[in-house]
Length: 388
Image (tube, rainbow, N blue to C red; front, side, top):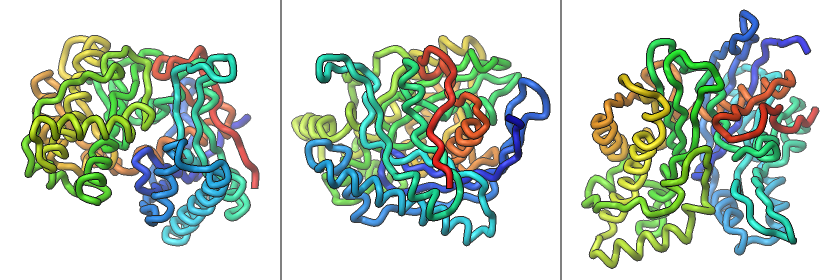
C-alpha cells in the first residue's frame, strides 16, 4: 500500500478516567526508506467526563460492581462520547480528519496469565464502540489497539514508545520519556540507538493512587497543583509491592494499584498517625520514588554512562509537588528533567498524538508495537478498522 499523508484524530481516555483528549495530527510518510513518519500537531482539546460517565467508568473497572448489561451500555455510551469529542474538535478547528485512532477506555488489563476455565489466560479490554464513532462521523476508525500485541506474547503496553522513538530519539543524548497519566511509564532510548534498543515499561502509579486518596479523604477528584500534598508531611514509603522489583517488560493498572491497594495504603499510614494531607503527600511520594527507583534500577543500566535527559508529559506534570520531588530524586542520578511543553509538544496531548500515529501505521498495514518494549514475539499490526 502506498503511504499517504493523512490528518488523523487521536482519541485518548486513560486510567485516571478523568476525560477525553483529542489531537488532530497531520502525519506524512518518511522522506526516505527506513525513516520515520513526520508529525505536525494541528490542534488539541480536552473534554472532562461528566460525573455520571466517570462514575460508570470507575464502577466498570471494578468487575464485582457492574452487570454485563451495564458494561454493554457503557461501551455504546462511550462511543457516543468519543464521537461528540471529535465532532466538537472538528467544529472548533475547521479541520476535517481522514482517519480516527481511538484508544478506548481500559476497564481491565491483565498481562500476567491466570487460570480460567482450565487454561492460563491473559487479557486486556478497552471499550467505546467504534461503529458508533464511524457511523456518526462517517470517518474510518482504528480501535482496540492493544490486543494484537498481547496475542503476540507482549504486555499490550506500553504502546507510546513508537511515538517516543519517532519524535524524541537523539543522536547525542540518552533520553528517558516519562508519561504521568493514571499509570507512569517510561521509554529509555540510548543515544543514537535503533528501534530495537528501546526499553519501555510501566513504573507503577502516577496519578491513580493520588486521585483515589483525594477522593476517599476529601471528596475531590484530584490534588490540584499538588497543593494538598504540599501541606502534608511526606512519610517514608517502602516500595514493597512486588510489581516495583519485577524486571521489564511489565505493565500495570487498577488490578495492581486500584481500590484494594488504596485501602491498605490509607490504613497503614493512619496506623502510623498520618493525617489526611500526610497521606496525600505519601501517595505523591510513592509516585516520585517508584519512578526514580525504576530509572536507577532499569533505565540507567540500559542507557550506560553519561548524562540523561528526561522529558515528562501527562496530566501529572500539573502537580508541582510531584515534579519538585521527582526532580530532586533524579538530580542525584544525573538525570535532568524538562517538560515536553518546553520543546513544542503540549504535555497533555502526547498520548492522543501517539494513538493518532498508531492508527496511521495500522491503516497502512505497518506494525505499531515495539517488541523490545512490550515483550511481544514479533512486530504486529495493531487494532481493528471500522469503516464508515
